[in-house]
Structure formats: structure tokens, C-alpha cells
Image (tube, rainbow, N blue to C red; front, side, top):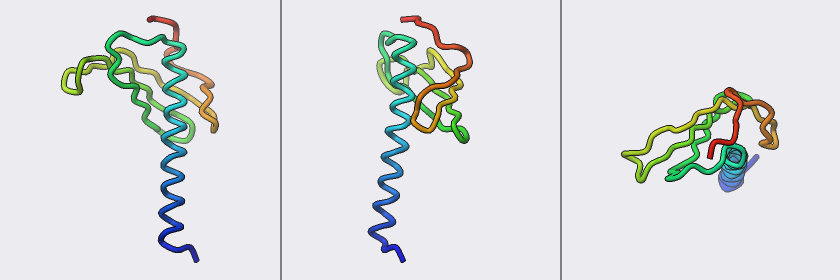
Length: 92
């Protein structure tokens, strides 16, 4: 039977894996799209299975940030992007 500490370690490792996976997806989107001026945040939200919504927020601070670009992304288990809607093109 797993101890409380072992369960917490597994949860921490899974959390780290998800964060790393999402960061990789966001980096790939920015690499293809280009880096917009006043980039505030790249938001990667898991939807289901290997599907994500990636929002590119620009602005000086959270209260004034707005979504400049938004993509529906399909990625494999390693975080490699297979397909985006709309297709990502270099804009910046």
C-alpha cells in the first residue's frame, strides 16, 4: 500500500509532467507564430485527450491583457503539435 508521502510524490511528479508538457506546446506555438510585442502570457488549457486551447495574451498587466491569438491544438503524448485550427502562420 502506498504511503501518503509516496502518493504526494506521484501527484507532484504528474503535476510537473503536465506543466512541462503544456510549456512545450506553448513554446512551439510561439516559435511558429513569432513573439508578439508586449507578450503577457501563453495560456495552454487542456481540453480532452491530446487536445488543447492555446491563447496568446498581450498587455502590460493582467487587468489589461487581451487575447491576440487563439488556437485549437492537437498534440501527441510528447507535446509535439500534430495539427492546429486555425493553422499557425508567422505573424510577428
